[in-house]
Image 1 (spheres, one colour):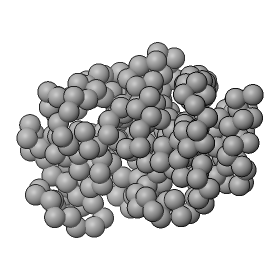
Image 2 (spheres, helix red, strand yellow):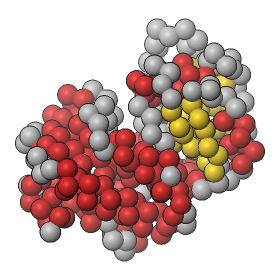
Image 3 (cartoon, helix red, strand yellow):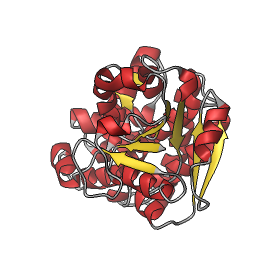
Amino acid sequence: MLSVIGAGAWGSAIYYALKDKVKTVITSRKKRNIEGFVDLEEALKNEYIIIVIAAQAISGFLEKYGEKLKNKKILIASKGIDIKKLKFLDEIFEEYVDGNNLAFLSGPSFAKEVKEKKPTALVIASKNLNLAIKFSEFFPEYIKTYVDDDTKGVEVAGAYKNVIAIAAGICEGLNLGQNAKAALLARGLVEMDRFGEHFGAKKDTFLGVAGAGDLFLTANSTMSRNYRVGLNIAKGKIIEDILSELGEVAEGVYTTKAIYEISKRENIYTPIANEVYKVLYEGKNPLESLRDLLN
């Protein structure tokens, strides 16, 4: 049996995709009116677990339940970097779980389209390829899964693309044109790769489904929360109001700050993330930021 922990849009989409193929239950902090919903203690009894909770909540979750996950096989579908510890999610999980029992899920995938059973491609990465293959067997035919061993690349790509999506939303909202947006995304892909390779990621990961694929989807559609953050920033709204109106987590807002701090510490050149940080956290004029980048 399989458990999905996290019943937000993405967690519930994964649950509905898997439950017809393998016996699956779902849980979250708040009780949901979903068939197959169980309490957390019950969900933690299963051997295979998919974690789909906000990246900034991972550390607190593990402090409370990490001991019960020690011998589980875990697929992490959360995307982000811990803003307080400035650590990647694999680093946080490996304080509690052997790295060979961890896998990461990423790729271009809007929850709405997964629920509608539209064709989707995802990457499952793990140091233990047998574990990645095992998790891939749980997915239905309309979700094509690729397995890989570049956990760091898949993790960085999944987190960083949200930052570039905010920048793309700002670009679109300011009506700077498709030429400017294309240049921004191309440079963003290079920036993601530069950051990832600094931590041992493979360049090919950023050219594939988990990198370019996820970036092109997230940075081009109003279905993306992070893209909508950028659009609203361009309209002059303040970030607190934007997040309140969204009613959902936009991980790119927090990932921006984490990348900014990490790149300073590690001396990594991340101009787009730096400008998004200045807009979100220092109040820099978004038009000035985009012009500085494009010039």
